[in-house]
Image (spheres, rainbow, N blue to C red):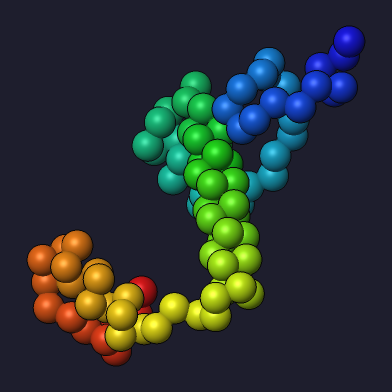
Length: 93
């Protein structure tokens, strides 16, 4: 069975080489952080984080369809409890 026939979750499975185009500034910033030999690992982790964010966005959208959007004042109050700060109902999330 070929690897293309098997579905792997993000972060699992064999590696596969591809060509990626980045702006010079982005590539420079990545190389400054991880060096030339760390670019692939850095991009792998960045892609995994983006997939997690996309999945979370989909879950939130599904929740909002069923329950309606979250009350901003309630979110601010809960954020204040979690962070130990004052409730800023008008602050951006």
